[in-house]
Length: 325
Image 1 (cartoon, one colour):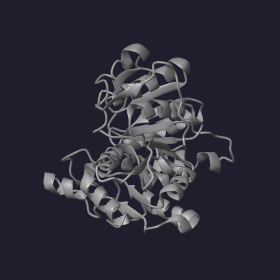
Image 2 (image 1 turned 120 degrees about the vertical axis):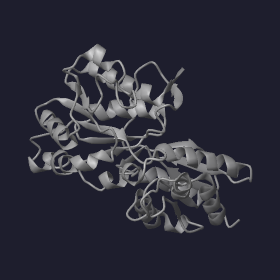
Image 3 (image 1 turned 180 degrees about the horizontal axis):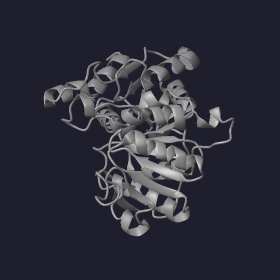
C-alpha cells in the first residue's frame, strides 16, 4: 500500500467521483487556475476542464447559493471554502437553504452537495482565522458533519460524502494537508457516522477527532510509559455521533477524557459527556474530563497559541487525574 499526503487523498477522492459521475463538479476560490489554495485540486482543471473545476469570486455567500441551486437541479457540487472561517459569510445558505430544503419542500428537493475546507487554528493566523466550527454546524439538523484525521479516512469519507444525497460539511486542517498515510489504490468507502478505535486500551477512553487526534495519540504513547493503557477513539463524524462505540468503550475502561479544538461551551465534548452519563453512569469510576481550547479568542503570539490549544501535557494531566495518580 502506498503512502500519500492528506491533500492527495482528497484529490483522488474528488477525481475518482468526478470520473464516475459527470454530475459532480468542484467550485471555490482558487480551485482551478491556482490548483487550490492548499494544492488539493492540483491538476484537476487540466483533466476536467473549466466547466467542472470552477474558480469563483471572493464571494462565499454567492457561490454557496449557486451550489445549493445546482444541487436542487440534480447536480452534485463540491463547494470549497478556503477556510471555514470564511463560511460565516455563507452560513445563511448553508443553514437556511442547504440544511432545510429537503424538509421545507416536503422531500421534493434533495441537496446532494459537500461543503469542504480547513477548520480550526493553523499557527499564527490571529483570532479571525483560527476558529473551529464543527460544533456550530453539528448543531443543525439536516447537515452531516465529517472531520477526518488521516489520509485513509479522508479519502473514504469524502467519496461517501460526495455520493450522499444530503448536504455534508467536510472539515479538514491546513496543518494536515502534508501529512502522509497509507491509502489503498483500489476503491473503498467509509460510512458516515461510524467511529474508529485507533488504539486499544483498558484503563481510560480518549475520544477526539480531526487534527487533535495527533494530540490524543501522542498522549496515549506518553501514558503507556507509565503503565496506563489508553483506548483512543476517532469519532471521524460529529453529526451523527457514534454514541454506541464510545459507550461500549467506557463500559470497558470506566473512565473518559474527551479532547477537541473548540471553545468549551456547547461543544461536541459537552454533548458526549451528557450522553455517556445518561447511558453509562454506573460504569464510570471517575468524573468525565474535557480538554478544549481556552474560552477566549485566539491571540497571535506563539505563546498564546500554545496556551490556547489542547496539548499532550494537558491530556496527560487530565488522564492522571481520572486515574487518581
